[in-house]
Length: 306
Image (cartoon, rainbow, N blue to C red; front, side, top):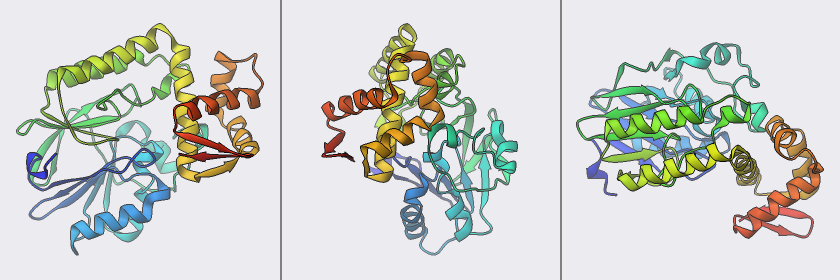
């Protein structure tokens, strides 16, 4: 997609699956970044943003939600630009202030996120000015209960975070904590349909043109998970395993199993959906599925990202 099809002053850094996409806004007198990626990529994020700013300071940092792959670069950006104003959704503001890695979900998922602070909230039902243009803030629970999405009605551009990708949506993490959230995913998809975007900047993957088929794929995926929650949990476990290898690149299988066994989300998924299987055998089964999907390799006693 050409840059000209985005609103003026908007630049997207497409990252991958370990780090979320970053969206940079350059206004006449202001600069802002939406989402900062994972901490392992913090230096790269900082370099990308600094190069695009061409000597200007970064003024604001906005997080769509506080998963580690979306806010893991916050601390590095705050350290580089001490005057940076950081805005987060309201749901976990107290937990950020007190820095509770359990409540914030980092320890349960077995992921890292350096401590950062916030200065203000990005509130659903309001507007935020980015690159001299007002963007609507909408609540988008489901993947994360406190997530927001941003919509610019003039160009009909949507920053969807992980509420909508070109081929689905992110893991519905509240379901891993035994909280009903599939209905919230559906409600957020309905909201996006009402907004009627032309272009979607997702949390991961390339910018894409919004079409009816995109929603149809997401709704079909959601319906499959609603019919069979074990399928969603199985998918979530593989996503977490793959994420770990995206970060570490290579691990001894025994260490891989030990990490998963000590990670609360894996403990909960196995307790609910695979209690009869020993942890090592279960992780081996999941790993072999990832191997068959060609996203993981096993070499000797090690498991590697592919």
